Length: 279
Image (tube, rainbow, N blue to C red):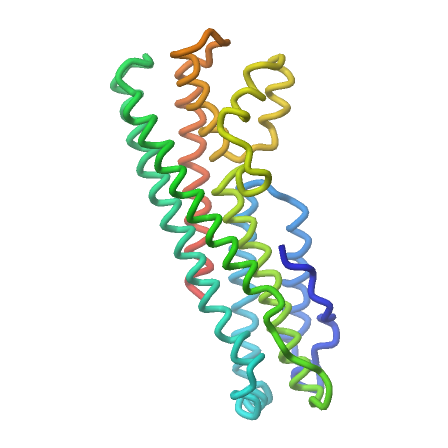
């Protein structure tokens, strides 16, 4: 993902005499960067909320007279336009993620209903399982495309600090900092939805094999770092394998359990995206 920006937040001087919003911006940015140390899907919703707070602070900074003057003076410069337009592209990425979450949640709900109707048995749920896994393939494809688009946004700024006034340099550095951390948070979101394929692209069956051909303890440790999306994928693939091969049985109620956790996690992520989209 994006390399950490080489700009230092402390150098921001809009206006020349530090405005109270500058320390607030620094604090929110540092807090958000610190949150990158955690990678759970649950924390992603918190990061999105923190990202909204950061953007709110930037919006307030943009309303300052000196900032407005800087914008007016450099409104036709390529880098400034790219940074301002970048926020719209990031919102488009959020829309793609939200659509993927909605699609996954609908198929997960249908599968949950089918499992309840089957009273915990495996018969009669094959269609719903296949539909869910087919939907997941489409979602992963969309997430990979969105991740490539995010990568294309990296390092697009052609800004050069030479012959620029301090206010302009500070303004561009601030927006670049925000874009960089926004890209990082949204990459985490897309990667979480896509699952392991976004990292190393193993097949579903290789993941299943990892879980069903090792000891139970080793399996639990291997699954510990997986997102809820991956856990459901693996549980369903294992369920299918159980019907055709002689392997350790994974009870259907375990599948129901991971589906319930997935739906809860999707709600958390959807709420985080709505926070960000409300900017």
